[in-house]
Length: 133
Image (cartoon, rainbow, N blue to C red; front, top):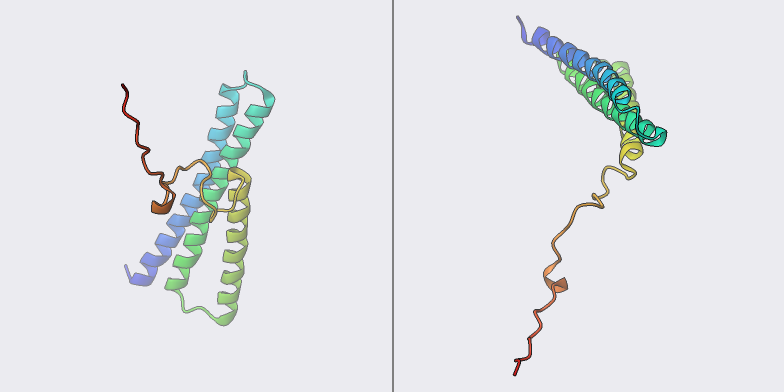
């Protein structure tokens, strides 16, 4: 098997994995809703949207990887590169908007739940405890 054929096969595998992630993730989200249907409708709906969004996001990232890998196998024309660029741009935009939908913040913004160590200048000096008599 030649290099070009291996790269095409790898791209095809990423495509299958991307579609599989979306389909399997959607099925798991539906099963999760069916199992937890006793909870409030708002909670169930939110969990369904988060699960579906995560599955779609993973699938889109795998499909973008497949598109990029495929360009290695071919000697693309300018038109093919422009189409690929547009596809990657659209999928990246969808990924960002899904990330905002799921997390409530842009991907490059820090996690508000993460704790960070205070900087050296922000640390408080330990206060001296007066001696007791």
